[in-house]
Length: 228
Image 1 (spheres, one colour):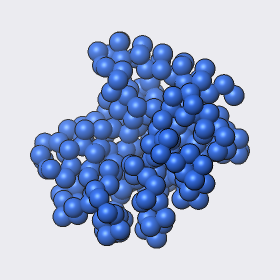
Image 2: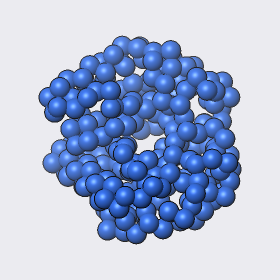
Image 3: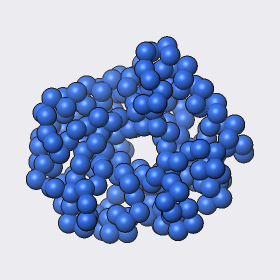
Image 4: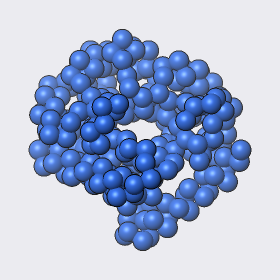
C-alpha cells in the first residue's frame, strides 16, 4: 500500500474537481480514516502529508494517539456514547457526531475549552444511520447555544452506500441547504462554515456539492482489519 501515491491521486482529483466547479482546493481537508489500519499505516499517512486522522472508537484513538500524538489533527468520526466522552476529549480536535442534547451536555461538562463539533444530520432518512432529522436541525442548534464549550463548526452526514449518484447528490445538496439555514441563524456558537461529507466512493460528488472535509479510508490508507 503506497499511501503517498494514493494521497497524490486524491489531491489531483480534488484539484481537478475544484477547477471544474470554481472552488479553491485549499478549502478541502482530507481526513484519513484509520480505524481499519495499524498504527504504522497511520504514521505512513502523516509522513505522506495527511495530517488529519479520523477514528471511530475510543480504543483505536487512544492507541494511535499514544504513538503519534500532536503530529496529527485528530477527528472522532464515529457514533459517540456519552460514557465514552471522558476517554477522548483530551485527544481529539474535532468531533463529527454530535447528534443529541445528552451528548452535548456531557461534552460541555467535561471540556476545559470549546470543542469543535460537527452536528450529524441524517439526510438520507435511513433508520440505520445516526443523526438528527433535517427538520429538527435548527431547533437543535438553538438549544446547543447554552453550552459554552460546544462550537458548531459545521455539519456532517453519510450518504447511502449505493450506485445511485442522483440520490447521493440529493443527500449532499440537502446538507448544504441545512448549512445555509444554520448560518442564517447568525449564532456565535454555530458559525457552521464546514461540511464533513464524502468518502472513498463518493467524495467527488461531495466536493461538487460543497464539502470542506472528506473522510477517506480504503482508497487512501487501505484496510488491514477486514472492515468495510
